[in-house]
Length: 323
Image (cartoon, rainbow, N blue to C red; front, side, top):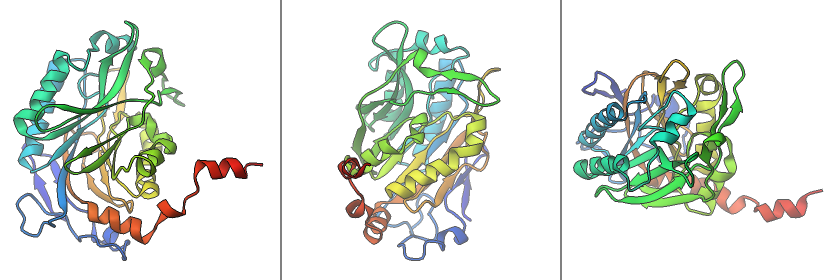
């Protein structure tokens, strides 16, 4: 397995074991992903990165961490870096996020747009505290910024995390967050991106809409999964979304203890459309980035050889067939 060290003494994992690769015998899939500058890199490959971090209540400290990770991703040749949900701020209490929320043209987002512009890299900012329609609410907004620092698209999280986690705390995201209403996909240099946030992962319909109605090739799932639910469901849900929609999945994750009330599971992953993990941060709780080269010809190959888009039944079919 080829690995390269990053400046924080973390590891970029750039490929999967051959036993995993050979489990997909009919696919045109390269045996390994190459490091930046390797002459064996496929002409169809484009480099992406996903960040893992432990955001806290300090906006400036979080920005410093993000800045460092952007520079590392750009140096590794990534065209897109994906950050996790709540990258810029994780509060101790629910009201903390509402108090710091800003509009998309405010100074917080402006800093991150400048980061993208300075490093000439696209950013997936996966879960920004956007000011809501009243002083008691915000939107949990996934923002895509291009390499000139311009906001290309936004998605407001639709499925809000109102859950009593067994053996854990009660979460009531809807008490301070307004739900979005629109499914969003956007074109980028690495392909067509389908935007989601965290708890959306448990609702396969939104991913099917992104794939079959909006043409997504890459599904983005920035998250802050709880430790308990992450241990049980994180990887299996992500791989399922990749397999059933025949898309790459990039899942940037919050990791570790943010404060005395909240801990995130971590385990940042990049998954191919056959469900193979092609990028994983070795330390589930560390701060760092994972880098992988994705090849959209693999997406085409999987879809051609298993043509579920042509074989699936529409929602109208199931309504008509209902008893």
